[in-house]
Each structure stands twice: as structure tokens, then as C-alpha cells.
Length: 528
Image (cartoon, rainbow, N blue to C red; front, top):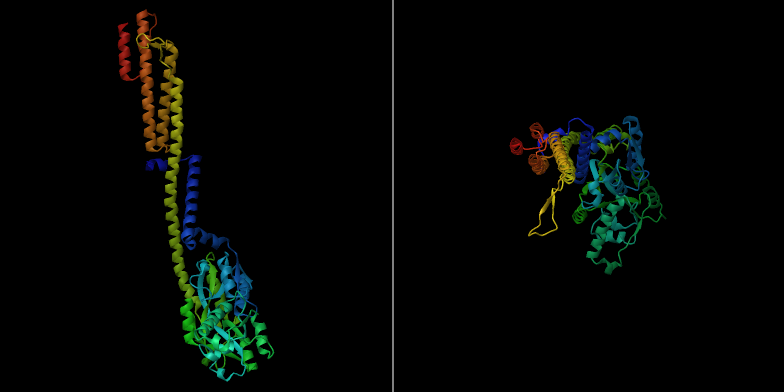
């Protein structure tokens, strides 16, 4: 393909077909940009960023179960966003963090809350989540009903490789939270650790098979069962922000209900085995005697689908920052739960970098579309040129078949070789030849005009014009022979009105006869 700048630029001149070509080139280039960028990184799609900011007005917020911090945040955002943003976040109660993660990852225009370690690093849909910022730390609460076991006195009830802990859990009825909650995920890590410890120490041979009964009741129902001396639930797992008022109340009201700790060594083992980032924490300042009870912590993260604009996320965080006191009560040190992490300043700093990303994405869009459009224009110009080349070839072939007459045919006799029989319809033949040369001259003019206006690529033009000149030479050679025959016949028969010199001059001037042919025919006339 060989198309010069003049060919391409001429497509922008004037008429409607060229406007259609330009529109088509832009459309193809933009669609190509969208496809490639979405395949590489959808978050860099400038067009989607603009459309989301302008057209997306309704969002979903996946929160949590009744009575928890998550659902309070969801309810607050549903109420306040309608007042302050001009958009709406519809609160969607869920069973917990794991359901939130899968819901946000599989939908557009959605946000939710999850624990940082709800998903492991190799989970397939983690790439579909936009981790915005931590909001606060959630601590694993393990509440149990004391059976009067002296080995588990205060400060000794810790999940570890302690034999008494294994015996306490063996056969117990444990509430591990809703099946799709973060609590169920973290409880699974801890119980897996205990099973591994039991298997290592061969407890099955000493104390029988290690087994538990798992329940998936809501936290409030499980808490009521734990408080009831005749209730079936003996242990409750719940990872949640502290202090939790209902936990504070039951610890004060029911002395048999206590908090169980988690050995930091057990935490290290769990992090190493499952490739997690759980943090060692305590309940110091959250509950009485809390400083003596080690536990694990994980940040509660705001996550969104990747199509939620950063400007909307910034406003969400501003609402949470303004209404911290409506999410949880004041702690003993005078702070609120959402004071544990400075999420708004942290995201504002990131937001400035997002704006630079936006400018980079804009630049990428402009460059990509410009280059792709130019490439598309060149390609379309070549396609149009190739199409016109085919049309011109058909015209040339048609002229050849219509206007180039059969000069002669061979005699059937063989005396000693076939003799050509000349077609003697001279006037008819000359007329056809003149019309053929005339049509070829017109085609040559059309070719130059199409090349000048960008309708033909230079290689197509050169090939076509060479064919036209070659064909024109064939026609001119036949015309010369026929006119020469006419003149010779007129001279030999002394016809009264031979072809005049002026008529020959007209043929030459019009381009039907070459100068050499014209000179030879003039010499024949002078013999007359």
C-alpha cells in the first residue's frame, strides 16, 4: 500500500462520502481504543470515566446483617447521599463481608464493606474490586460460656496448642456466622488451626475423634442462646468493630460469658499457612480486662466496583467523616470507631494522583484515537482506491471489447499457408477506433482527477495510467493502419474526395493519432 499525504488529506475535502469515511474512521478507532483499553486495564478507559461521572446516578451499597456496624454505615449513606450528592446509594443488607465482596465484584455501580483478609490474594475476582481505603479495625470476638474449667481461668482461655483448649472445643456447638460472612471465613482459619494442632498431637488416639458442631445463626440470636444456661450455643465467633455495645452488656450482665483470646504464635501460623495479613490486636480500652486478651484484627475496607467515579467515592468518605458519631458510640478515650484510621485525608491524597491519572488517560485517549484514525483513514483510502481500480479495469476491458474491431481472419485454404482476409468496412472500423481512443482519453482524465482528490493511491494510479496508455497505443496503431489503408485505396482508385489533410490534423490534435503516424499519413496524402 502506497498512499501519500496528499491522498489522505484530500479525503477531508468537501463532499458527503468523505464525511462518511471520516466518521467511520473515527468510529472504528474509538471502538478499537475501548476494546484494547478494556482488555488491558478498564480503569484507564477515559470514555467510561466521563460517562460514569455524567450518567451514573444510582448506586448500590452492600452492607451487612441487622444490628452490625456495616448495616449502620449502609443506612447512613443511603440517607445522606440523597441529601448531599444528587445521587442515591441504595442500602442492600447482606450476610456479611464475603457476600459483599462477590456482589460488588460482579456488578457495576456498587460499593460495600469487607475485611481486608476476607479474600485471599489468589481469589479470582479480587482483580474486579477497587480497594478504596481502610475505615477502622475489626477484632475477632470469641465469646464462650465458662463450664467451670479451672484450666481456662481468666487469661488462659486462648486459642493455641494448649490441650485444654482442644478439649474445650471438641464436641462444642459453635456459631461461626452466616455462610457468606467474613466471620465464617476467619472462624474457618482458626478452627483449621486447631484441627491441625490436634492432628499433630494425635489427640484422636487419646481423647477420641476431634469434632465440632457448627451453627450459622445471626449474632443476636446466637448471643441470646449463649446467655441462656440451657442454650445450645457454647462458643460464638464474630469479627466486628469494638467495643460492641451488646458484647459490653452481656459481659457485665452474665459472668459465665467471657472473651477468649488468640495466641500470637497461632496468628503467625495462620498468616503463613493462608498467606494473610491478620494483625495482632488486644481489647485494651474496649472492654474491662481487655488488655489481657490478645486477638486478631483486620481492617474493614471500603471497596467499590471499578466503574464508580473517584469523585463520588470522595463524597462518600466525607459523609462518613462528618457523621462518625452516628455509626458508633464514643469510646472510653473519647474517640469514635471511625477515628481509628484517617481515611479521608488518605483518600484525598490518592485522589490528587487519580486526577493525574485522569489527565494521563485523556492524553492516551487523544493519542490513541489520533493514531488509530489516521491508520483507519489510510486503510479506507486504500480500500476505496482498490475498489476504483477494479472499476477502471472493467471500463478499460469494456472499451477494448467494444471498440477494437477484428481486423482480419484467416482463410480456410492452405496455399501454402493461410492468408489473412482483411475486413473492408473501413468507415465503421475507423469510427469505432476513434470512439475507443476518445473513451480512453476520458478515462485518463478521470484517473488524474481521482488521484488528485485522493480517490486513488499512487501505485493504483500508476498501474492504471500505464494500462490506459498501453491500450491507447494499441488503438492508435490500429487507427493508423486503417486510415493508411483508406488513403492508399483512395489514391489507387483516384477517388474524388480522399481524406483531407485538415481532418488528419484534427485527429492528431485531438490525440487520436501520434505525431509519427500523422507525419506518415501526410506524406501519403502528398503523393496524391
